[in-house]
Image: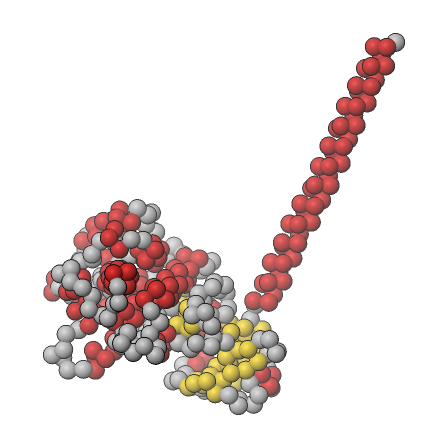
Length: 380
């Protein structure tokens, strides 16, 4: 009798434990599923907030207070300051009416509208009201990087080498995201200081996607009917197929030219306008690096010297004449984050033999750089 009672007691206790465990599991699953649902709802809410909104022209006039605060004007349109609410300040770009604006407008909305990255400017909304078109961006109070590109001797606008390095790294991460982080690869084709905007903390954001092209992530070659970009930043292969096919490596070249311009405090286009007897600025930078001379660009200490040297080496890697010789943007990010002493000096992009088409040399060079960085190279 006692044994039977004991057995029932044990079975009862076991049942209670199992029941308690089951209830706890159900409750825990409920809490977990509720948390997951909250995450999903937050994602959908964020997505709804990030998705560009279509506005009428009447609403654009209200947002800009009848175009009362003009921020600037370019070849394709005029930019005004506006406000969607008291908290949300925006920059509104009113596009000029011309034959080319239709495609530029579609490029902007079709590319930047699908991006979400800290280093890509956010498209808040757009207007397509008859022939009146406008693009609404987040407002970035420090303007473009271009106004901060000047000699370090000019203390008024010089940001310091640490900040310049942070900006360069942020831009590199933004371009890497365009090339590898989106469902479809986005080729910008106009990376330059004027198209990099800075927020209140000087975080860089890539803008102006009017020349951009979409392609699949496994597509290595892009067909083009005409050169696109800004003189001084356009990759050689965009002008001539003798230097290879147009690809995402064309953006790498533009980034490299912008990087060299940033560290030197001198516009690349100035060399194109000056007397031909002057030494081409990027070539002068290469000579300093190759001869292991001091950078001579107004650095204050050894730390600044290392930062400037690293940025110069990365820039020179990016402007190799042949696309196959250039690193991917993933490799650029790793070089900028790494030690300058571990970053190899690139081949001379200005040597006469570099201007001849090459078949296999670039593969060896890229492999060498990849091994130095100890990374897995992206598929070409």
